[in-house]
Image (cartoon, rainbow, N blue to C red; front, side, top):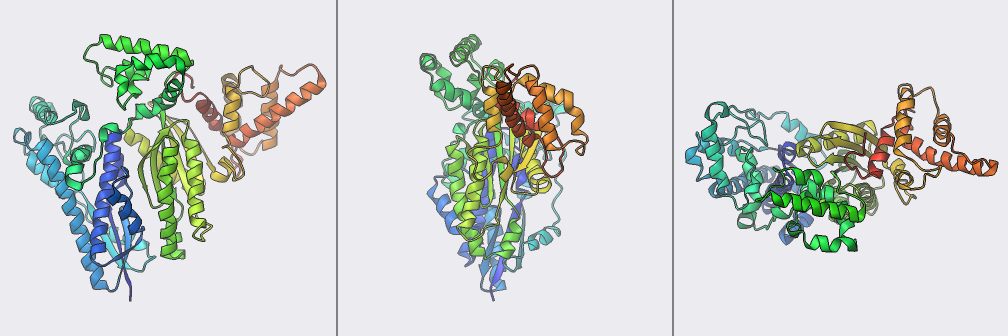
Length: 586
């Protein structure tokens, strides 16, 4: 009789999401994937057949060493001939995972922390405690489709205390920072300890002066530095784009293609590196901490060159990038209802194509495996990318004779200065609670996140966001009309959208008073007021054009099920039309 091993480990979300910079995000995701792959290899060596995900595809990707993002999930299922084999393989997988984690941690310790440890307060003991007690591993034996087993097993766990004493890590706040000193009493000793840590670094910017990390965060931050030596993977973390790089990308593409900018770019010495964002953004360039110069006179020089570039293209660098999080809907039910090899085949096909789509839209993958996708993209690319990924997911399953599979998405347009952990938490909330639960799956949920908090949000099912036969998403025609010059009667403006929200905000409170047609008539009258041509036929044509435009706007702002009106859709039109430029939003 065939027995199945259900294996998982964590914590996953907090390990990846507790990130201060994109370096932490990529490194944490890749490290998690590597540990999962290590556990899978142990199960494979023990005679198990990993049925979910497709182990052969994962192995091929990892061993080719061509992908720099995570590909192996923290949860997998393997088939065995008997129960005794399962138990032995589970223990082997757990041991292999922990051993690999300790090996990686030891390499980071020796290279970055060992020399500073004697000047700390019991630093070695803190390191040993945190590294030895971090991962929670759970496994269960049962049928192939019994996805509830791990949930029951995890309910039995007795995790160690996760809120430690002393001063806390600035990245993973529940853990004690490594020096062991209390800053209010021993800040001089604490500063000296971290000064010694920074003395081991090739790039001093990889650990800011105000960063004091725990053992786990230190491993995550510096794993790329020892990855080639320990796991045989060259992870060039210095080339990973920052949030400000992603925010500046649309502006940078525009100046690169403009002949007037060629000479100025040639004289832009700092631009020679891969990180150009802080020099293409006014706020970042003015920030002495974010963009340090040895000679402060240089800052004025770069500011003048940036103004020259802005004038040449009549535009300026943006402050917003996009985080895209996507996850297959009702995967547990699919696994229960469909043959495992069919589901695995579809997921393998999808996970191979999804990163290509992200790269096509100038994005970078953080994780792409199974039914999950986590990526960072420029603001102007993410919506089209999400639609194409959704179509690819459904296509992959249809090829394997599964027509009901869908995927949901969360898109967070975030100001580059908003803490990454906050952006990631918002993305998970909008994916799970808004796109999946509130919008009932096969949906996209969007939010704009500024330093002061969320300013607007919007959600629709994918078939309303961009119908199958449509060439563009529902925002595109409205964005185009907003950007049109000349003030034609069927164009939008900041003033009109603002007045719409201000004058008709009361309509948002009671969804029963007005139908969609009523709202179209009302808003059309607001748009054309005092603008119609004096010739009756021309006026009739203008009224119809305006009505068509407003119909599209109402469709975005009105919930088809509840008939609730929400002007956040209009605010999002304006935000996207202006490319999220700072100072151009209310």
